[in-house]
Length: 219
Figure (cartoon, rainbow, N blue to C red):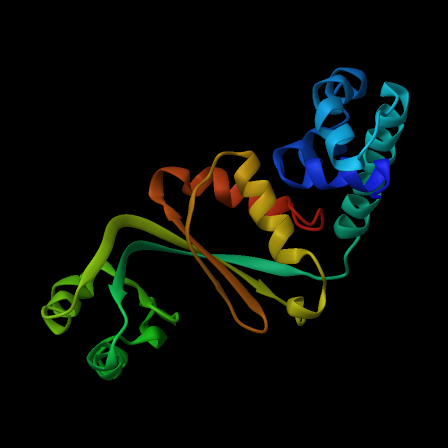
């Protein structure tokens, strides 16, 4: 039998927006406990007092607040680099697509400030590229199956002073903050010291503000 506390955590974890409400202290424990009581009892396997659910919600909220403070006191420092005029293309993966990717690497010059990222999945290939190379890229990919394409995008890169991948929760924290502001993320790109989000231009300034302060160390 699963404990009431674990049942409550499982339910809250399904809705990440609740994290922000718990951290900010704007969620009514009593009202929320009442709304999930039937589900808690189903997961727990027997009747549960409303007061026990309230206590579990409150304790989880305190746990989340503690983690949030730990994140904000993180020693990681970073700067944000914005690249505009990005175009995103998703293509069905096959042998010919992978062969053509090297043509794109020869085409784009990142040292001059251009943007190129290629992510290879099991069934798809995602390409984010500076829009000035769009016609050339589409010509290279003209015989391939394009699943989706979208322009007027921006790439926001967090360049860390240390290895952020060794710090648990950084990616989740950034995504959670963006989601709270209803900012859709087209692509997430990570390397050892960089974390990049490709988003719509109209969300760029709001996203910049969110990412600038999400660790609490940069204003």
